[in-house]
Each structure stands twice: as C-alpha cells, then as structure tokens.
Image (cartoon, rainbow, N blue to C red; front, side, top):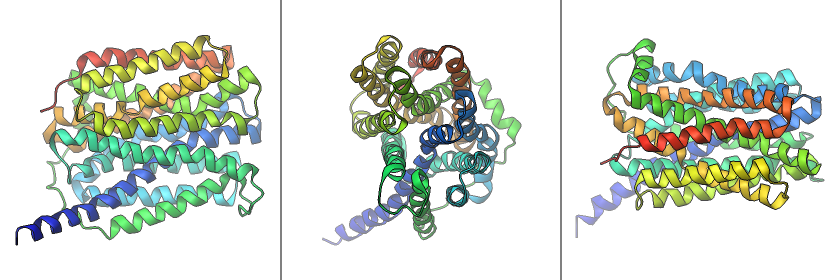
Length: 395
C-alpha cells in the first residue's frame, strides 16, 4: 500500500516538469509566423518575391551563427538556463512589431526572432533528454513538434483575423498575432523559471572547431543535410503556398493564406499521429513513407491547376514533413551520445536551410514563377529520399 505514494508523487513531479517544457515547444513554433508575416509585409510594401523572402531567410540565417556556440553555452550554464535566455530574446522580438510595421522594424524583429529560436531549438531538444531517454525520445520529440505545430497553424488564422475583423485589435491589424504570442511567451518564461529540472552533468569543454569537426563523420553530415532540406521545405511551403494560389487563381492574400493553415493543420495532425506510430513502426519505414508523400505532393504542385488538388498537395507536404525533424534529430543524438550538446548545435545549425531554400526559391520565382520555387523544394525532397537509406535502427 505504501509503495503507491512514491510512484504517484514521482509521476506528479514528472508532469510538473514536462508541462512547462511542452509550453516551450509551443513558443518554439512562433518562428513559423515568418511565412505569414512576410506575405503581409510584401503586400504592404510592394516587395518582389526575392525581397520578401529576405525576411524568412534572415530569420534562419542566425541558426548558422548561434547554434554551435549555444551548444557550448549549455555546457557552461546548463540547458534550462539556456532555454530561458532564448525565451527572453524571443519575447523582445515579438514586442518590437507592436510599435511599428516598417520594413526595417520587421528586419530587426525577425533577426531577434531567429536568434532566440536558434538558441531555443538548440537547447530545448537536449533538455528533453534530461527527462526522457532511450527509444521513447523520438516519439516525445515528435509530440513536441505536434505542440509546436499548433502555434504554427494558428499564426495565419490570427493574422487574417486581425487584418479583416471589425473587433478591436488595438490598431495592430494582422500584427495582433505578435501581441498574443508575446503574452504566451511571457507565460512560458514564468512557468519554466519556476520549474525544478535536475541539471545535467556538464560535458567536457569544447570549441567551435571541435563541434564543426563532427561533420567529418559521414552519418552526422547526412543528418545535417537532411535537417537543411526538411527546414527548407517547411519554410518554403509556409511562404510559397499562398503565392502559388494567388498566381494560378488570382485570389487575394487573405483567402489564399488558408493554404498555410492547411499545411500547418496537416503537419499538426501528422506530428500527433507520429508520436504514436513511431512506437509501432520502424523509423526507416515510417520516414520513407513520409518522404514519398512529399514527393507525390511536389509532382501535383508542378502539374496541377485545380485548387482542390493544390490544397491536397499542400496538406500532403504537411503530413509528410511533420515527422522528418524528430527522426533525423534523434538519429543524430543517438549516433554520438557523449556529445549531445555539440551534435544538437550542429543539427540546429542545419536550420540554416530555412535561409538557403527561400533565397533560392525567391529568385527562381522571380524568373519563371512559383513553379520555380516548387522545383527548388523538390530537390530537397529527393535528398530526403536518399537519406532514408542511411537511417539506423535505434535500440
């Protein structure tokens, strides 16, 4: 009879720890508002595709700069403190657009959003390993992506509501989403700060050179490139989906932006299902099926002129891309268990793909239309198909 008390207490303690971490995953999803925001900024300031795509490219540029140093910072101050720093920077980035909507203001805000998210994604995923280990890690990270996706698909809905509603939005219009997300970010800071999470034993001191040297390991390099392609497809779809519909069907942005919501809703559903399916289906088989869904979607986007088919294609990308990151990330961490912080930094540096792909897609779209942007994303899907062959069984 007495043994139930410690078990119940332990379970309650775990829930008190995991709930603030899950809330942080929601805050991590704020970065995906960049696709929606860039489309509204493009409309307000009459920007070309290449000019507008500088905004998402700028956000993810900072992953190249800050990811590896963040891995080293975690060794010094711990993962929880590093996550808290990232949340504070994210909060500042969300507050800035409340005081102006010029292109320069957005560039500054998106830069800080990218810095905060780079630090957060580098430190939050390893923080989960303080609570979860072994073969359950992939499914738990997938659940985190599910929570993150909720914030992602709410962004275009909140922006559209702010842009067209007759209700008071404090004169912010579509920028009301920044105010709402800033409030949630503040709540995340307070919840995590008040939560006790056992500090991990500090890893041995490392340098940027030693971290980058890990890319010399073929499998780590494969994972790094896989993350680049995953994020490139994610940001590319987020940004380009409404543009495809506006180009082919001449719909206004407020109506075309439903495509972004479809993408994130399907990504949310995919992440939720993946959290369970990854416990039942081998990662390699599940990953391969996900990539094939995206490949089918790219073919449809290239050749279809049906609005329904375009929406279905965007949904298929959301389903397929929803579980790519946690599988690659868990594969990378388990391949180098003694260097988790450094490997995490490298993998999050791979989110630099969110700079490379939109930049290339913007110029391709300026040259031959949105079909050029789809062709760039297709290259990323083909690499992920190749990566499927490299996936290892996790024990």
